Length: 78
Image (cartoon, rainbow, N blue to C red):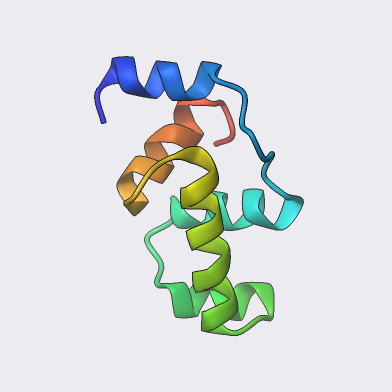
């Protein structure tokens, strides 16, 4: 994702805002940990985290972990 794309994404209001848990998961994605480790930290299953990650990606319009982390940093969530 280019800087221009990141800026456009951040300034465009989300059709569906991120839930509190989705914001937590998004911040965890920035750490160098696996989904299994995130699940353990949050006391949920790996499949729950996978579902939440997919929902975050859909809402912010990205398709990779790196893009999601870049989006969060550009949006000031990290």
